[in-house]
Image (cartoon, rainbow, N blue to C red):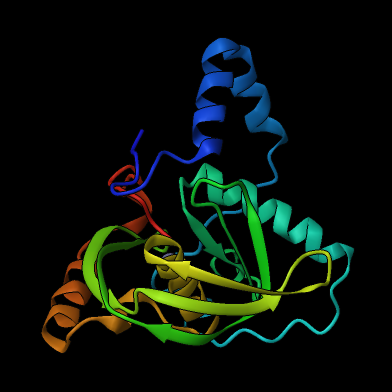
Length: 205
Ligand code: ZN
């Protein structure tokens, strides 16, 4: 099991590991009731399209968010955007250690500083790239309760927000690379069967 470098092991991971260690029979039972989705991988056209704004925050979004949480936890992701499970709506989920959250129609209204992070993506398994992005961002969006929210985020949380909004805009972390590095990455991706790559290489978004 990986532990995100530079940040504490997420609480859900600790809790899940503790519970499953104490009751091994739960590990199988829990797996069966999880409504998870396969994570769409690089090459899937849904990852290249801009997702549409959510116009009506209703109960179906809560159901969607719950299945996104399960998918995100099963994939050991710190974040997950709806297009990664084939849903072209502007919503993403995340958990960097404070429990699961979902943001609807997110936008970054302020960004400052620079922060380099070895970024990975659940849709590009097994690859990490050192990418510089703003260190602090202010995000506005809507919560699952329908209320407007504003969050100032730093470092890893700021990175998750930026990465997931890129997904909603049809961008992958590969699009953030320098041209030469991007070319090398695309060549490597063509030569691999992504579905066979284990996800245990490190945190991914
Ligand atoms: Zn991603």
